[in-house]
Length: 457
Image (tube, rainbow, N blue to C red; front, side):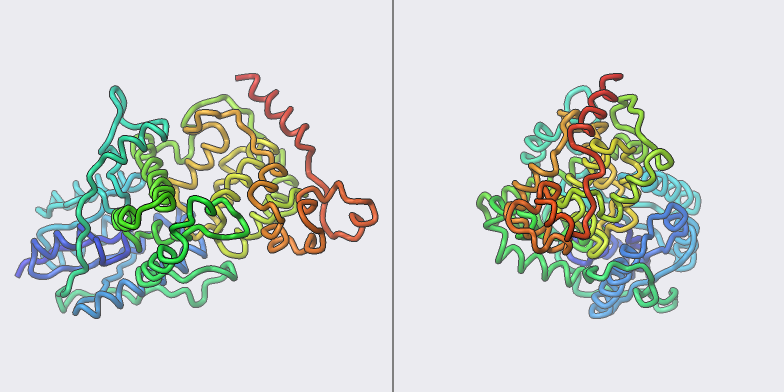
Protein backbone atom coordinates (compact mmCIF):
# COMPACT_ATOMS: atom_id res chain seq x y z
CA UNK A 1 0.00 0.00 0.00
CA UNK A 2 1.75 3.18 -1.20
CA UNK A 3 1.19 6.56 0.47
CA UNK A 4 1.75 10.13 -0.72
CA UNK A 5 1.46 13.38 1.23
CA UNK A 6 -0.10 16.58 -0.12
CA UNK A 7 1.12 19.64 1.74
CA UNK A 8 -1.54 22.35 1.47
CA UNK A 9 -0.25 25.91 1.80
CA UNK A 10 -1.90 28.72 -0.19
CA UNK A 11 -4.07 26.31 -2.17
CA UNK A 12 -6.93 25.41 0.18
CA UNK A 13 -9.34 23.79 -2.27
CA UNK A 14 -10.19 20.46 -3.89
CA UNK A 15 -11.29 21.63 -7.33
CA UNK A 16 -8.46 22.16 -9.83
CA UNK A 17 -5.71 21.03 -7.47
CA UNK A 18 -2.83 19.49 -9.48
CA UNK A 19 -0.77 18.37 -6.44
CA UNK A 20 -3.70 16.38 -5.06
CA UNK A 21 -4.53 14.90 -8.45
CA UNK A 22 -0.90 13.82 -8.95
CA UNK A 23 -0.72 12.31 -5.47
CA UNK A 24 -3.91 10.33 -6.00
CA UNK A 25 -2.52 9.00 -9.28
CA UNK A 26 0.81 8.03 -7.70
CA UNK A 27 -0.31 6.33 -4.49
CA UNK A 28 -3.02 4.12 -3.02
CA UNK A 29 -3.58 6.45 -0.08
CA UNK A 30 -3.01 10.18 0.38
CA UNK A 31 -2.52 12.31 3.47
CA UNK A 32 -3.87 15.85 2.96
CA UNK A 33 -1.72 17.87 5.37
CA UNK A 34 -1.77 21.43 6.65
CA UNK A 35 0.98 22.58 9.04
CA UNK A 36 0.43 25.43 11.46
CA UNK A 37 3.92 26.83 11.19
CA UNK A 38 5.16 29.01 14.10
CA UNK A 39 7.37 30.79 11.58
CA UNK A 40 4.24 32.44 10.21
CA UNK A 41 3.39 33.71 13.68
CA UNK A 42 6.93 34.92 14.33
CA UNK A 43 6.84 36.96 11.12
CA UNK A 44 3.51 38.53 12.14
CA UNK A 45 1.63 37.18 9.14
CA UNK A 46 -1.17 35.50 11.11
CA UNK A 47 -3.18 38.67 11.73
CA UNK A 48 -6.62 38.06 13.32
CA UNK A 49 -8.66 38.65 10.15
CA UNK A 50 -6.58 36.21 8.13
CA UNK A 51 -6.48 33.69 10.97
CA UNK A 52 -10.28 33.67 11.04
CA UNK A 53 -10.58 33.34 7.27
CA UNK A 54 -7.95 30.59 7.29
CA UNK A 55 -9.92 28.67 9.94
CA UNK A 56 -13.00 28.86 7.70
CA UNK A 57 -11.00 27.62 4.71
CA UNK A 58 -9.55 24.68 6.63
CA UNK A 59 -12.96 23.70 8.02
CA UNK A 60 -14.46 23.81 4.54
CA UNK A 61 -11.57 21.81 3.07
CA UNK A 62 -11.91 19.17 5.79
CA UNK A 63 -15.66 18.92 5.21
CA UNK A 64 -15.16 18.49 1.47
CA UNK A 65 -12.56 15.78 2.05
CA UNK A 66 -14.84 13.95 4.49
CA UNK A 67 -17.62 13.86 1.90
CA UNK A 68 -15.14 11.93 -0.24
CA UNK A 69 -14.04 9.54 2.46
CA UNK A 70 -11.00 11.49 3.56
CA UNK A 71 -10.07 14.20 6.07
CA UNK A 72 -7.59 16.99 6.58
CA UNK A 73 -4.66 16.25 8.88
CA UNK A 74 -3.47 19.32 10.82
CA UNK A 75 -0.10 19.36 12.57
CA UNK A 76 1.63 22.20 14.43
CA UNK A 77 5.34 22.95 14.42
CA UNK A 78 8.14 23.91 12.03
CA UNK A 79 6.87 22.88 8.62
CA UNK A 80 9.96 20.95 7.48
CA UNK A 81 10.10 18.98 10.71
CA UNK A 82 6.41 18.12 10.63
CA UNK A 83 6.36 17.07 6.96
CA UNK A 84 9.46 14.92 7.41
CA UNK A 85 8.01 13.27 10.53
CA UNK A 86 4.66 12.56 8.89
CA UNK A 87 6.31 11.16 5.78
CA UNK A 88 8.33 8.78 7.96
CA UNK A 89 5.31 7.87 10.06
CA UNK A 90 3.18 6.79 7.10
CA UNK A 91 6.12 5.65 4.94
CA UNK A 92 5.24 8.07 2.20
CA UNK A 93 7.10 7.80 -1.09
CA UNK A 94 6.30 11.32 -2.31
CA UNK A 95 5.28 14.72 -0.99
CA UNK A 96 3.37 17.02 -3.35
CA UNK A 97 2.93 20.78 -2.94
CA UNK A 98 2.25 23.95 -4.92
CA UNK A 99 5.16 26.20 -5.86
CA UNK A 100 5.38 29.51 -4.00
CA UNK A 101 7.20 32.70 -4.93
CA UNK A 102 8.07 34.52 -1.71
CA UNK A 103 11.52 34.21 -0.19
CA UNK A 104 9.97 32.22 2.66
CA UNK A 105 8.26 29.82 0.25
CA UNK A 106 11.43 29.34 -1.79
CA UNK A 107 13.50 28.57 1.32
CA UNK A 108 10.81 26.19 2.57
CA UNK A 109 10.88 24.30 -0.71
CA UNK A 110 14.68 24.04 -0.70
CA UNK A 111 14.78 22.72 2.86
CA UNK A 112 11.98 20.24 2.23
CA UNK A 113 13.71 18.89 -0.86
CA UNK A 114 16.95 18.46 1.04
CA UNK A 115 15.46 16.94 4.21
CA UNK A 116 13.05 14.60 2.41
CA UNK A 117 15.69 13.59 -0.10
CA UNK A 118 18.00 12.54 2.74
CA UNK A 119 15.26 10.11 3.80
CA UNK A 120 14.47 8.78 0.33
CA UNK A 121 11.24 10.75 -0.12
CA UNK A 122 10.70 12.68 -3.36
CA UNK A 123 9.36 16.24 -3.27
CA UNK A 124 7.10 17.08 -6.22
CA UNK A 125 6.52 20.82 -6.64
CA UNK A 126 3.72 21.89 -8.98
CA UNK A 127 3.67 25.20 -10.87
CA UNK A 128 0.55 27.08 -11.93
CA UNK A 129 -1.48 26.29 -8.80
CA UNK A 130 -1.59 29.67 -7.05
CA UNK A 131 -1.29 31.65 -10.30
CA UNK A 132 -2.83 31.23 -13.75
CA UNK A 133 0.57 31.26 -15.47
CA UNK A 134 3.53 30.00 -13.48
CA UNK A 135 6.03 32.60 -12.31
CA UNK A 136 8.96 32.52 -14.72
CA UNK A 137 7.02 30.78 -17.48
CA UNK A 138 7.25 33.88 -19.66
CA UNK A 139 10.34 36.09 -19.63
CA UNK A 140 11.69 38.86 -21.83
CA UNK A 141 14.96 38.56 -23.70
CA UNK A 142 17.88 39.25 -21.41
CA UNK A 143 16.00 39.17 -18.10
CA UNK A 144 14.47 36.68 -15.70
CA UNK A 145 11.22 38.61 -15.32
CA UNK A 146 9.10 41.40 -16.76
CA UNK A 147 9.46 44.75 -14.99
CA UNK A 148 6.63 46.45 -16.96
CA UNK A 149 3.06 45.17 -16.96
CA UNK A 150 1.89 45.87 -20.53
CA UNK A 151 4.46 43.71 -22.38
CA UNK A 152 3.96 41.02 -19.74
CA UNK A 153 0.21 41.10 -20.32
CA UNK A 154 0.72 40.65 -24.06
CA UNK A 155 2.91 37.59 -23.55
CA UNK A 156 0.77 36.25 -20.70
CA UNK A 157 -2.35 36.45 -22.88
CA UNK A 158 -0.72 34.23 -25.50
CA UNK A 159 0.07 31.44 -23.05
CA UNK A 160 -2.02 28.30 -23.21
CA UNK A 161 -3.46 27.62 -19.78
CA UNK A 162 -3.33 24.10 -18.43
CA UNK A 163 -6.58 22.14 -18.25
CA UNK A 164 -8.40 22.36 -14.93
CA UNK A 165 -8.49 19.25 -12.75
CA UNK A 166 -11.85 17.88 -11.63
CA UNK A 167 -12.64 17.47 -7.94
CA UNK A 168 -11.65 13.95 -6.87
CA UNK A 169 -14.48 11.55 -6.13
CA UNK A 170 -12.63 9.65 -3.42
CA UNK A 171 -9.70 10.41 -1.15
CA UNK A 172 -8.40 7.52 0.94
CA UNK A 173 -6.40 8.56 4.02
CA UNK A 174 -4.39 6.09 6.14
CA UNK A 175 -6.49 5.29 9.19
CA UNK A 176 -3.61 5.47 11.67
CA UNK A 177 -2.53 9.02 10.81
CA UNK A 178 -3.66 11.52 13.39
CA UNK A 179 -3.62 15.30 13.68
CA UNK A 180 -4.69 18.06 16.03
CA UNK A 181 -8.13 19.71 16.04
CA UNK A 182 -8.91 22.21 13.31
CA UNK A 183 -8.40 25.86 14.27
CA UNK A 184 -11.51 27.96 14.76
CA UNK A 185 -12.31 31.64 14.50
CA UNK A 186 -14.13 31.36 17.82
CA UNK A 187 -12.20 33.17 20.50
CA UNK A 188 -10.16 35.29 18.13
CA UNK A 189 -10.09 38.95 19.15
CA UNK A 190 -9.55 42.02 17.02
CA UNK A 191 -11.65 40.82 14.08
CA UNK A 192 -13.17 43.35 11.71
CA UNK A 193 -16.97 43.40 12.23
CA UNK A 194 -17.70 43.03 8.50
CA UNK A 195 -15.22 40.21 7.86
CA UNK A 196 -16.50 37.72 5.22
CA UNK A 197 -16.60 33.95 5.67
CA UNK A 198 -13.89 31.89 4.02
CA UNK A 199 -13.68 28.57 2.24
CA UNK A 200 -13.85 27.08 -1.23
CA UNK A 201 -17.61 26.59 -1.06
CA UNK A 202 -18.28 30.26 -0.28
CA UNK A 203 -15.74 31.38 -2.85
CA UNK A 204 -17.23 29.33 -5.66
CA UNK A 205 -20.72 30.50 -4.78
CA UNK A 206 -19.58 34.12 -4.76
CA UNK A 207 -17.83 33.88 -8.11
CA UNK A 208 -20.77 32.15 -9.80
CA UNK A 209 -23.23 34.75 -8.50
CA UNK A 210 -20.97 37.70 -9.33
CA UNK A 211 -20.20 36.39 -12.83
CA UNK A 212 -23.89 35.95 -13.49
CA UNK A 213 -24.94 39.37 -12.18
CA UNK A 214 -21.96 41.73 -12.44
CA UNK A 215 -19.24 40.47 -14.79
CA UNK A 216 -20.77 41.92 -17.97
CA UNK A 217 -20.67 45.42 -16.50
CA UNK A 218 -17.31 45.12 -14.79
CA UNK A 219 -15.45 47.23 -17.38
CA UNK A 220 -17.82 50.16 -16.86
CA UNK A 221 -18.37 49.95 -13.11
CA UNK A 222 -15.31 48.45 -11.40
CA UNK A 223 -13.91 51.89 -10.48
CA UNK A 224 -17.17 53.04 -8.84
CA UNK A 225 -16.35 53.11 -5.14
CA UNK A 226 -19.96 53.39 -3.98
CA UNK A 227 -21.25 50.85 -6.52
CA UNK A 228 -19.04 48.13 -5.05
CA UNK A 229 -19.13 46.14 -8.30
CA UNK A 230 -15.78 44.39 -7.91
CA UNK A 231 -15.73 40.63 -7.39
CA UNK A 232 -14.32 40.70 -3.81
CA UNK A 233 -12.62 37.41 -4.63
CA UNK A 234 -9.16 38.48 -3.48
CA UNK A 235 -9.34 36.75 -0.06
CA UNK A 236 -10.32 33.47 -1.73
CA UNK A 237 -7.49 33.82 -4.22
CA UNK A 238 -5.02 34.67 -1.46
CA UNK A 239 -5.79 31.44 0.40
CA UNK A 240 -6.13 29.43 -2.81
CA UNK A 241 -9.77 28.60 -2.14
CA UNK A 242 -10.33 29.48 -5.81
CA UNK A 243 -8.19 28.51 -8.79
CA UNK A 244 -6.93 31.46 -10.88
CA UNK A 245 -6.71 29.13 -13.89
CA UNK A 246 -10.39 28.30 -13.55
CA UNK A 247 -11.35 31.96 -13.08
CA UNK A 248 -9.50 33.00 -16.24
CA UNK A 249 -11.03 30.16 -18.22
CA UNK A 250 -14.56 30.86 -17.02
CA UNK A 251 -14.23 34.60 -17.61
CA UNK A 252 -12.92 34.06 -21.14
CA UNK A 253 -15.79 31.68 -21.81
CA UNK A 254 -18.19 34.38 -20.67
CA UNK A 255 -16.61 36.88 -23.07
CA UNK A 256 -17.12 40.60 -23.50
CA UNK A 257 -15.37 43.76 -22.28
CA UNK A 258 -16.23 43.07 -18.63
CA UNK A 259 -14.63 39.64 -18.75
CA UNK A 260 -11.57 41.05 -20.52
CA UNK A 261 -11.15 43.68 -17.80
CA UNK A 262 -11.48 41.06 -15.07
CA UNK A 263 -8.90 38.80 -16.72
CA UNK A 264 -6.54 41.77 -16.89
CA UNK A 265 -6.82 42.15 -13.12
CA UNK A 266 -5.98 38.48 -12.67
CA UNK A 267 -2.95 39.06 -14.89
CA UNK A 268 -1.81 41.88 -12.59
CA UNK A 269 -1.76 39.30 -9.79
CA UNK A 270 0.41 36.96 -11.86
CA UNK A 271 2.64 39.88 -12.85
CA UNK A 272 3.44 40.66 -9.24
CA UNK A 273 4.09 36.98 -8.50
CA UNK A 274 6.67 36.73 -11.27
CA UNK A 275 8.36 39.93 -10.08
CA UNK A 276 8.68 38.70 -6.50
CA UNK A 277 9.74 35.20 -7.58
CA UNK A 278 12.70 36.81 -9.32
CA UNK A 279 13.31 39.49 -6.69
CA UNK A 280 12.16 38.09 -3.31
CA UNK A 281 13.94 40.88 -1.42
CA UNK A 282 11.37 43.33 -2.84
CA UNK A 283 9.00 42.27 -0.07
CA UNK A 284 10.98 44.60 2.20
CA UNK A 285 13.49 46.51 0.07
CA UNK A 286 12.88 49.00 -2.73
CA UNK A 287 12.58 47.25 -6.09
CA UNK A 288 14.05 50.37 -7.69
CA UNK A 289 16.38 52.28 -5.39
CA UNK A 290 15.51 55.98 -5.46
CA UNK A 291 17.36 57.21 -2.36
CA UNK A 292 14.20 58.52 -0.73
CA UNK A 293 14.45 60.12 2.70
CA UNK A 294 11.10 58.84 3.88
CA UNK A 295 9.70 60.20 7.11
CA UNK A 296 9.83 57.53 9.80
CA UNK A 297 7.32 56.46 12.46
CA UNK A 298 9.05 58.74 14.97
CA UNK A 299 9.14 61.73 12.65
CA UNK A 300 5.53 61.48 11.49
CA UNK A 301 3.78 59.70 14.36
CA UNK A 302 0.78 62.06 14.53
CA UNK A 303 0.22 62.04 10.77
CA UNK A 304 0.51 58.25 10.63
CA UNK A 305 -1.95 57.85 13.51
CA UNK A 306 -4.46 60.15 11.78
CA UNK A 307 -4.08 58.16 8.55
CA UNK A 308 -4.63 54.85 10.32
CA UNK A 309 -7.71 56.17 12.09
CA UNK A 310 -9.25 57.77 9.01
CA UNK A 311 -8.89 61.31 10.33
CA UNK A 312 -6.70 62.95 7.68
CA UNK A 313 -9.28 65.54 6.68
CA UNK A 314 -9.45 64.14 3.15
CA UNK A 315 -12.82 62.34 3.00
CA UNK A 316 -12.14 59.68 0.37
CA UNK A 317 -8.89 58.67 2.10
CA UNK A 318 -10.63 58.52 5.46
CA UNK A 319 -13.52 56.52 4.04
CA UNK A 320 -11.04 53.99 2.64
CA UNK A 321 -9.21 53.59 5.94
CA UNK A 322 -12.44 53.14 7.86
CA UNK A 323 -13.69 50.56 5.39
CA UNK A 324 -10.41 48.69 5.91
CA UNK A 325 -10.87 48.59 9.66
CA UNK A 326 -14.53 47.55 9.47
CA UNK A 327 -14.36 44.94 6.70
CA UNK A 328 -10.72 43.87 6.60
CA UNK A 329 -10.96 44.71 2.92
CA UNK A 330 -10.82 47.78 0.71
CA UNK A 331 -11.70 48.59 -2.88
CA UNK A 332 -8.60 48.48 -5.09
CA UNK A 333 -8.88 52.12 -6.16
CA UNK A 334 -9.36 53.15 -2.55
CA UNK A 335 -6.17 51.25 -1.67
CA UNK A 336 -4.24 53.22 -4.26
CA UNK A 337 -5.58 56.53 -2.95
CA UNK A 338 -4.95 55.73 0.70
CA UNK A 339 -1.47 54.37 -0.01
CA UNK A 340 -0.54 57.24 -2.32
CA UNK A 341 -1.63 59.78 0.27
CA UNK A 342 0.61 58.26 2.93
CA UNK A 343 3.64 57.67 0.72
CA UNK A 344 3.61 60.81 -1.39
CA UNK A 345 1.43 63.51 0.19
CA UNK A 346 2.63 62.71 3.74
CA UNK A 347 5.95 61.33 2.46
CA UNK A 348 6.01 58.43 4.93
CA UNK A 349 7.98 55.24 4.32
CA UNK A 350 5.80 52.87 2.30
CA UNK A 351 6.74 49.94 4.57
CA UNK A 352 4.84 51.57 7.45
CA UNK A 353 1.66 51.65 5.39
CA UNK A 354 2.21 48.17 3.99
CA UNK A 355 2.55 46.80 7.52
CA UNK A 356 -0.72 48.43 8.60
CA UNK A 357 -2.52 46.97 5.60
CA UNK A 358 -1.12 43.53 6.43
CA UNK A 359 -2.36 43.90 10.00
CA UNK A 360 -5.96 44.24 8.78
CA UNK A 361 -6.43 42.94 5.24
CA UNK A 362 -8.07 39.53 5.02
CA UNK A 363 -6.40 39.22 1.61
CA UNK A 364 -3.13 40.56 3.03
CA UNK A 365 -0.64 39.10 0.61
CA UNK A 366 3.12 39.67 0.73
CA UNK A 367 3.24 39.55 -3.06
CA UNK A 368 0.44 41.90 -4.02
CA UNK A 369 0.38 44.09 -0.93
CA UNK A 370 4.08 44.91 -0.93
CA UNK A 371 4.43 45.35 -4.68
CA UNK A 372 1.28 47.46 -4.98
CA UNK A 373 2.64 49.67 -2.20
CA UNK A 374 5.92 49.96 -4.06
CA UNK A 375 4.06 50.79 -7.27
CA UNK A 376 2.27 53.62 -5.48
CA UNK A 377 5.39 54.83 -3.69
CA UNK A 378 7.32 55.04 -6.96
CA UNK A 379 9.93 52.49 -5.89
CA UNK A 380 8.32 49.61 -7.77
CA UNK A 381 7.26 48.83 -11.32
CA UNK A 382 5.26 51.99 -12.08
CA UNK A 383 6.65 53.53 -15.26
CA UNK A 384 5.62 56.96 -13.91
CA UNK A 385 7.12 56.89 -10.42
CA UNK A 386 6.58 60.61 -9.82
CA UNK A 387 2.81 60.55 -10.30
CA UNK A 388 0.79 61.81 -7.33
CA UNK A 389 -2.91 61.00 -7.04
CA UNK A 390 -4.97 63.98 -5.92
CA UNK A 391 -7.56 62.67 -3.41
CA UNK A 392 -10.04 65.45 -4.21
CA UNK A 393 -9.90 64.95 -7.97
CA UNK A 394 -9.95 61.17 -7.58
CA UNK A 395 -12.79 61.34 -5.07
CA UNK A 396 -14.93 63.34 -7.49
CA UNK A 397 -14.16 60.88 -10.29
CA UNK A 398 -14.59 57.61 -8.40
CA UNK A 399 -17.33 58.74 -6.01
CA UNK A 400 -19.10 61.53 -7.91
CA UNK A 401 -22.18 61.66 -5.68
CA UNK A 402 -20.19 61.19 -2.47
CA UNK A 403 -22.11 58.05 -1.48
CA UNK A 404 -18.95 56.09 -0.60
CA UNK A 405 -17.70 58.90 1.63
CA UNK A 406 -21.03 59.27 3.41
CA UNK A 407 -21.22 55.51 3.98
CA UNK A 408 -17.93 55.41 5.88
CA UNK A 409 -17.58 58.97 7.23
CA UNK A 410 -20.93 59.61 8.93
CA UNK A 411 -19.73 63.00 10.18
CA UNK A 412 -20.20 64.20 6.59
CA UNK A 413 -23.54 62.51 5.97
CA UNK A 414 -25.43 65.80 5.80
CA UNK A 415 -23.04 67.41 3.29
CA UNK A 416 -24.71 67.28 -0.10
CA UNK A 417 -23.25 66.40 -3.48
CA UNK A 418 -19.61 66.79 -4.47
CA UNK A 419 -19.05 69.29 -1.69
CA UNK A 420 -18.44 66.30 0.57
CA UNK A 421 -14.99 65.90 -1.00
CA UNK A 422 -13.85 69.38 0.15
CA UNK A 423 -15.57 70.05 3.47
CA UNK A 424 -12.98 72.72 4.36
CA UNK A 425 -14.60 74.91 1.67
CA UNK A 426 -18.02 74.82 3.34
CA UNK A 427 -19.34 78.01 4.92
CA UNK A 428 -17.91 78.52 8.38
CA UNK A 429 -21.20 77.85 10.18
CA UNK A 430 -21.57 74.50 8.40
CA UNK A 431 -17.98 73.51 9.15
CA UNK A 432 -18.49 74.31 12.80
CA UNK A 433 -21.28 71.72 13.03
CA UNK A 434 -19.08 68.92 11.65
CA UNK A 435 -17.08 66.71 13.97
CA UNK A 436 -14.48 66.32 11.26
CA UNK A 437 -10.86 67.54 11.15
CA UNK A 438 -9.33 69.92 8.67
CA UNK A 439 -6.70 68.62 6.23
CA UNK A 440 -3.45 67.35 7.76
CA UNK A 441 -1.53 69.16 5.04
CA UNK A 442 -2.40 71.20 2.00
CA UNK A 443 -2.13 69.20 -1.20
CA UNK A 444 0.12 71.81 -2.77
CA UNK A 445 2.43 71.69 0.26
CA UNK A 446 2.56 67.89 0.17
CA UNK A 447 3.31 67.90 -3.54
CA UNK A 448 6.06 70.49 -3.14
CA UNK A 449 7.71 68.44 -0.37
CA UNK A 450 7.54 65.28 -2.47
CA UNK A 451 9.01 67.01 -5.55
CA UNK A 452 11.76 68.59 -3.45
CA UNK A 453 12.65 65.25 -1.89
CA UNK A 454 12.63 63.49 -5.23
CA UNK A 455 14.73 66.25 -6.70
CA UNK A 456 17.63 64.91 -4.64
CA UNK A 457 17.62 61.62 -6.63
